[in-house]
Image (cartoon, rainbow, N blue to C red; front, side):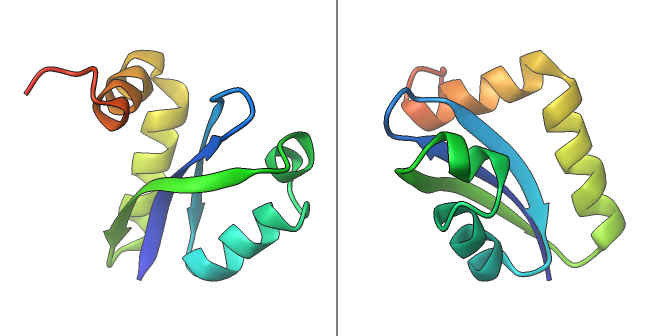
Length: 85
């Protein structure tokens, strides 16, 4: 299984989109400061993830969220309850 995930920094509300084949391990790495986002933000939480059977599809989704500002913004609005139903 492959995962696209969204982390949120509790200190300032910044979001991070990532990809991993082992979501638990990657989250632990972020929380222990083994990533730039984890170093910049000490208190982070997993707020969303999607699971895919195909690595190619998961990477494509991650790239779309990272490169298309509006798509990422819509997802963030949805997560924060500000999006329309």
